[in-house]
Length: 319
Image (cartoon, rainbow, N blue to C red; front, top):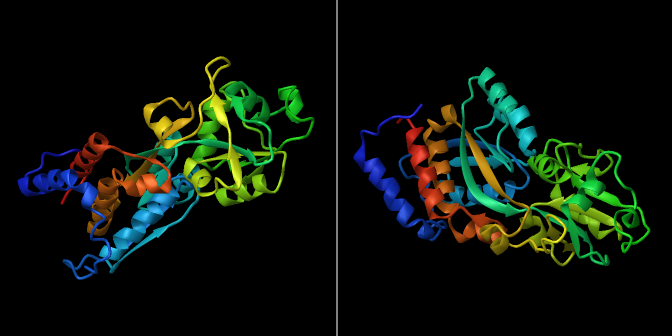
């Protein structure tokens, strides 16, 4: 439900913090745990891709508000919606793809109204072992490798590749990254293979690729950036003849990287009426536009999206 604000001071405050959000982290080390008695608990579940951002936001927020406990847990986008957020057991769910109609229906059955905020963009990264001679792959080749009844050897996809069987490492089917890859890369006419080492821990995917010369896997760019010495990122060619583009924040930002995608948090509107949840979400949205997000490995939200998010936050806060 939207409303017309009667408190001009709160609206003016949001505009003010928007203009100075780049400075928001400067005072994060001060202890202001006694500021107005803010206390309570905020529960964050969801996407393993969004998890590093939420976890860092929680750490910084708690350094300012010592009596608020923000817990973060990587459950996968779908796992978070299904098992925690929609049943009403989490205040916020990170997601690496938009919420689905069936998830909205599930939430509605429990009187949970999800409010969507895009907080960053990602360059979904496909990686191979450092010893691999493969440098670039097309969407069609990826589909052949990752769909049901898939091709099992590298050379069957491309005769210039080795005559060795693939070892595949990737997200579980509760992951939003899995869903995005299945829809946009594997293709609507196919289904994602179940013949891969599936996990919600992206670090396990990195380890699997690192330990096997014939391995391939995919995850959010932040995990590649953190482990770029351990695995090799492939350049991506959406269609043959388009040219290969490497995953990077700049290429995701300008849209030239074909596997760029938005990242979200969803907030339970009822939870948002609790002061500690509102203040944490406000802090999150303000700082999603700063270098905090970029340092983790994602494209910050930008000032226009930040201001749009803050306006939506106010419209859904009934204090």
